[in-house]
Picture (spheres, rainbow, N blue to C red):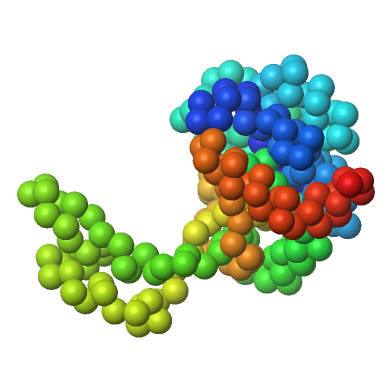
Length: 241
């Protein structure tokens, strides 16, 4: 089983996001070390299009046996394209590919390695699942959200009702809904190869504590605050103060 850490260089919301420093360490280093410290992961590969990023990844124990091609490193490039490139490279250059891939996104750096291992074990115990995906519960149910229709009127999401009073009920009166986060996903190579999908139609949820995923500078500032309040995330990975 391998881990893949995607770390393209062209982020626009936060320039060079994947190497931006959090408590003096590049963001992607947190995910690389989560992979190298897992008891179930045999190697941690960083998929990057940048020589600079590759050098930094290597300094924290990540493997960069290739650079990701530019045509699958843009804003619209997909995780599926990236994973297929990793598998193709391994098969063509090493003659084999792993049965499973653990997807560790650099944009969700504050994770506990023990939780990563528990997620892997949960997936391996559920033979019928096509993938495992980490999620956390939304603070407000998505059923309490709204859309604006073509007449510039508010309507309830999902039910499309113009009468909004029903959405004012306490959140306990609605189904719980969840955000997919980047804490840990476990993927099946067989599904990727046979169905050209990375998650499929029988996805096992792994519920984590709420986490911050970095897309904007504001997200990064929140992440810095969280890291300062709970230094255990940092200390458990880097072992220094």
